[in-house]
Length: 156
Image (cartoon, rainbow, N blue to C red; front, side, top):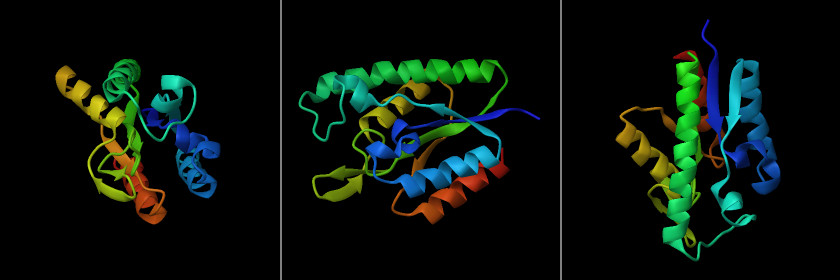
């Protein structure tokens, strides 16, 4: 049996920063009960200036920061693949301006788009010609999120 891992955002593993402790516990429980290893992604926001941020003042510098982090993450993914682990995917967090996969928060409304970090991860994967699924976690629809994760685990 091949060992499986999934790359999970900091805020999913640390409910203190997202106010979603019940939801994050369900996700973590699913992975641990399914013997899936959890690799924590860096938090671009905390690593950018040492605290969680809602507005980025210098978007170009922040994008460059996210690009550097994405290169490190992809190097880590590559190491797991070379060690013959199955990398189930990289989780993003919907409505996040940093980790949104399909939708981001734009002021008071949610709009289609990718967060900066997930966008940079995807661009770098395309440049390196390899693909690992980037999967949306939606705290507002945990049933759908858990169903998606269950399918991912079963089909790997």
